[in-house]
Length: 246
Image (cartoon, rainbow, N blue to C red; front, side, top):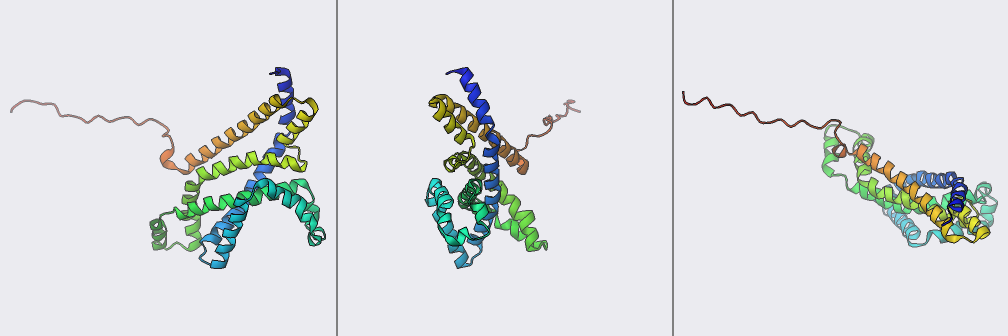
């Protein structure tokens, strides 16, 4: 491998990292709200809402993200109602379409993770909170959500890392994030191996950082997993000295 070319490629790709991070953070942040709403719809006990949420999850988990990006970027403009709506100045932009596609996709997966976390909360905890007179919103905020987040965080961390990698598909709609810049360099130099090795290393570094942040959050939310500040000093059991027979 040409080290000089690899370094030049790395410097070119690093300039596209902020856009990659921006895409991932926007999609994850917005998708979390949609996912929570879908999870609550599934658990609401209202059949039409539950069926609507299940249909949404089925569609977005059952179709490729690439197809979803194409349908949103190229398909929405085929409807006159969309082109004449106030959303058209936003939806005709590649960045907005990419964020929308990633958000809707991750919301489908994340809703099932959140739903599993909510279902994992022991009923006894909720009953104990009701017994001390907590209102419903306080129970949700102080009992259900902390426990559910703690249970769902490992799986949700995997979904966040998948979303960082999924941002590479945004290059197909002309966004110059890491993969888009890498494709441009390959078209100019025809050096595929070096460029993709460097691009893969950048994605690996991003996900390694994200995994450390998720691990830190998991430990912060789990007191039993925290390392004690100081090692416990073993206390030896004192044995009374034998003084012999009186």
